[in-house]
Amino acid sequence: MMQEWFRKAKLGIFIHWGIYAVGDVSESWSFHNGGISYEDYMKQCDGFTASKFDAKAWAELFKKAGAQYVVLTSKHHDGVALFDTQYSDLSVVKKTPAKRDLIKEYTEAVREAGMRVGLYFSLIDWSDPRYRTVYPEGSNPQDHLKDVFATPAGGPEDPEKWQEFLEFNNNQMRELMTQYGTIDLLWFDGDWERSANQWKAKEFKEYLQSMNPNVIVNSRLQGHGDYETPEQGIPLLGPKGVWEFCTTINSSWGYRPSDNHYKTSRQVIRMFCDCLTLGGKLLLDVGPKEDGTLDERQVKVLEDLGQFIHDNEEAIYDTEKGLSYNQFLGGSTLSADKKTIYLFVYDRPSEFLCVKGVKTPVKRVSVLHTGEELTYDYTGSLPWSGIPGTLWIRADKMQMHPLVTVLKVELEGEITYNLGHGEVVTNND
Ligand code: GLC
Image 1 (cartoon, rainbow, N blue to C red):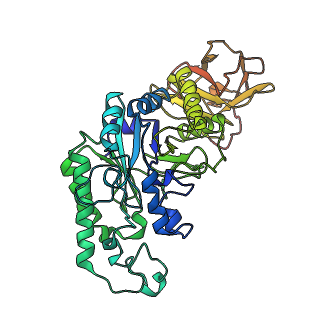
Image 2 (tube, rainbow, N blue to C red):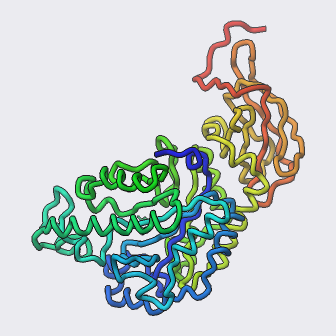
Image 3 (tube, rainbow, N blue to C red):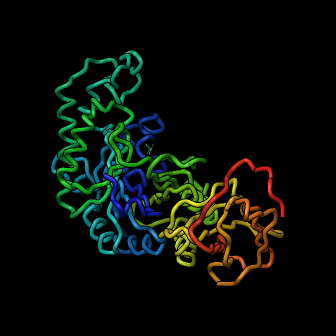
């Protein structure tokens, strides 16, 4: 169910933390795809210490980054729970030197810092033999002979065991939703390996809602989610309804020391602005090390993002999607009262910035973080014909923000548009 807090949220922090942070391998996929044996992958348990994990410090950093909610992997496709589950031995509490319920510390700290609490949970569990007892609906068993972690791989199906697996997931969900205070958001993953029918997705969702009627559920529940979650490739057009774009800071979800393909702060902020412009939100991923600390390059991006948001808050939090790219060659948002446009300027203009198709006259243009007023002019406008013309904002001399500069364009009233194909002027003055 869509809650107001989530509809309005602009930034979430995603955390992929698990035993995969020990070696230099990808989360779960590394053994699934044969990059490492299952045994070697699981040996990472011995090196997962969480020895410097400070949930409060995390929460403080995410808050400073401007986040309104946080989502942590409670269990990835490898099946290793970060919480103290009584339904399996496969948890960091029982199988690693960490010996702590990390979900407990995390949920408390995030809530205390005033952010909404989200949990990622993989429906897929490639470690549990019961998970492999049915084939993806409608598929040919012969096509799955190599899918050793996903399906019976040529063997017969066992619907009873599958039912047991679903109950196992239900039990773990009950633990998560009843022992850690209110969970505001559930972020499922891996639904694609089975159908809605096989997951019993409708009943599952009802079951979750019976524990928290207000819980928000992401889209990865075979048609039973509340919002869309495009991943890594930023959408060029906003998906329908409420959506959240999730992305990594380098190229990996979890910590990989060999991954130096970091995005710069400006790139990340640009992506954030792209999401806002199209009416979406950003869920930015960090991958903590096995000891619970973050790579300083990830911290830096979060701090810069926080700086940008802090300096330009009114252009971000209480806004809605902005102008189309046909109207302004850049990003933008619109204030809740629709009387102010905020323009995101990524590079120094060599002369003017221009805005097209806005009929309501401009009252004032300024640089948001300094208050500096900018001059502007219209060309081609014929107000009596409803033709707004082009608004030219002189912007070559303005003082830029070190990250992204925001211009505040105040209008005489609520925004109105003329977005046509142009018209013949039948009444010249
Ligand atoms: C992916 C992957 C995964 C990652 C996630 C994040 O498709 O299965 O490893 O956790 O989605 O969006």
